[in-house]
Image (cartoon, rainbow, N blue to C red; front, top):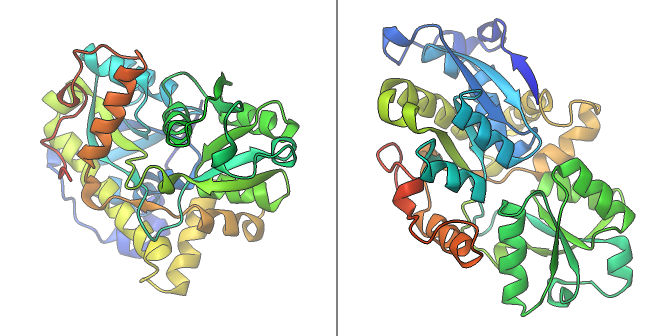
Length: 337
């Protein structure tokens, strides 16, 4: 986990500097730790940070970066992070059941017509016949932890194909990529900016699309502690307003492409500070554009998808049968789709 603290970012974007304080004056200078992964899919938070939307709400944001979803959920429960965006995991649901966390909105979504997450095969597995998801039977599938989004996707995809797969928990995305490249694991699914970069470099093969099996999948959610959701409503609403503005800018620039070429180029440059920052912009830019999936407007949440995920966790005995969607979600903050 690493930290990144904003220093004077209002001066970076003139339009943002002119924004009024939309939140309560009581929030002015409120310090927040926001959990994130260095993925294009977390761009709404990065945009809100860089363009002063958090500042305009009186929120002084510091990022805490993680390498997997479940540690981020633990950080929210412990108070090490205040808000975060991540996939629904068994760990997150269990923390919600204990009264430690609440989902307050939706973020990344699979959407018809928008290029989304890919199903990958190692080169070794591909050469041995794993040329499509229909050939998954008897193969291994990489996951970070049991109950992760990778586990959910792999289980749903293999079940749809009548395949039996073995799941290999490797803890971190970097470890999964290494195992896939070396042929220690056969298959995986991941957001397009990572999938296409790996395939373009010849390290793996793309053998399918997650959306073909999970249309309208609510990939990630916005969540916070149960205490923040229940007792810090003004702060939580301010966070969601700023986050939603960041999502609007991102969607206009790179998903709907209505903001124009210059805006798209500026968006890529902004995101590059956080995603593939170790690579030159000219090399990172294509991967960042490839990762431009829809981030839900106004943090709306696809409840049908959330319900399906909860039901899957129960079927796998990863959470208690008594847990319901209401255990996980506070529906008072965002539109429920």
